[in-house]
Length: 235
Image (cartoon, rainbow, N blue to C red):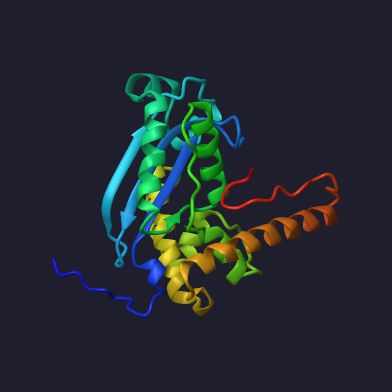
């Protein structure tokens, strides 16, 4: 098959992307454990050229609510999952190596990268310091400040015309996030900048978005909410 670059005018950062997603035992960034993970590479046409997947036995109970989202039960994890320590080491090293030559894409990056850091520390592994990173959620909020409806991965994929066949499957979500980033690169000329500059911009944009959300909640009679800053990792 001939390899044509159908989007030659896209920013160079979008021509090869490493995509990353986790499914976990919960939403707590410090206590949740990894259940499944995917790291893949997309070429300039959005085709998957490399793929690594992991199913872990997290060593703790997978709540029924989490299993209902990603489909992995305690029984499946016990029967088919690998030990978390070696798997987390593999995930970190795979991302570290890929990040030397391409951006890492993660939708709502602080969720995945903060949990990965917490897990690495838990197992005595040197944490990943991801950079550059592309976060399609931060990009959408920056380029489309006012949007009706939700900004879930599924909702944004529908808006940008990206197919998401199996939401909350780590591989499907990772690949969809990469395709979404490539669509955004085509749609918004303001994203045509050097990748280091775009990474730095997202650090600022993410904090601004978190503070704006906190202000909005205060207007909704939720004055106790405190914005947690930090991107792509919340320390």
